[in-house]
Amino acid sequence: MTVATTKPMARVPELEPSHKDARRYPQGVAFMDGQYLPMSEAKVSVLDWGFLHSDATYDTVHVWEGRFFRLNLHLDRFFRGMERLRMKLPYDRQEVERILSNCVALSGHKSAYVEMICTRGGSPTFSRDPRDAENRFIAFAVPFGSVANKEQLERGLHVGISETVRIPPTSVDPTIKNYHWLDLVKGLFDAYDAGAETALVMDTNGNIAEGPGFNVFTIKNGQLKTPAFGVLPGITRQTVFELCKEVGLTVAAADLSRDELNEADEVFITSTAGGIMPVTRVDGRSIANGKVGIVTRQLTDLYWKKHSDNAWSTAVNYE
Ligand code: PLP
Image 1: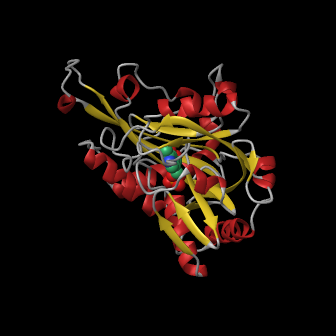
Image 2: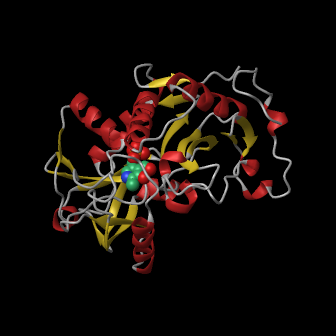
Image 3: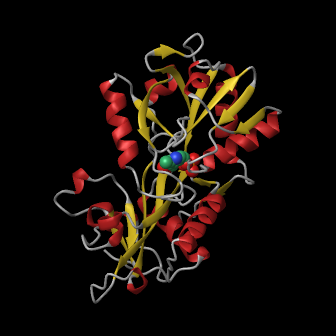
């Protein structure tokens, strides 16, 4: 059932979950503590600081039709985050890349959601000093998932703005991808209570920040805008900047007010979990004519085209 990274990979059927509650887990393969495991067997100690204190960083990259999309950018962000949190792994960048690829290959998924995580771990002597902790690396590949379902992608998401304020960047550096999600989850409940499907939360200055797992863009008179302050600089957001350059659209990263959002011609959100996804209602009111906008569609088409471009994507080795 277990395979060391240096040994040849086991065949996928050998990794089929045998655990009785395997049905409660998505089909996939994880790597942790030096072994490849079915998702149902990948478990972390309750004493890990990642679990006890959200002391962790992670990144998520997707695989689409057998190719990683923008893997280098995700690895850059992951390694930068670990450095800032003073975490260290026994694996270098090439090894992490190989482990991610192995997880996907062993899972057999052609389109996958692939996560790499570094937790603080814990100290063998239960020391309370984070410097004594042995950091833990976990990776996994499960089926591709999206913030928006098929219907929402076609007609646009209905978003509610929550008054909840995203954790300030002076408390938690948002450029380090993290699991501080109590604000985002509260935002989701606020949005559900208001009849919306997902949420946007505010920054500490009362402007729009981001949502649970996504950045937001508006388009007004052909100009794009996305919040700059207190948000995770998403790789999909970065990709939109590059696509705009390619097609000659102007985009600004700057404060975005609630009014600007309501009065936009088009709104969309961006995430590795789904790409570019349209928003057609905010706080119960239609954006413009309530239909998915032309620019949103143009950027979405280009975004998915780039998934087969060698400059933007890397093939998974399924051998
Ligand atoms: N903002 C938050 C809080 C996120 O968790 C994510 C992704 O999980 C994003 C934005 C979007 O980032 P990316 O485009 O890199 O997936």
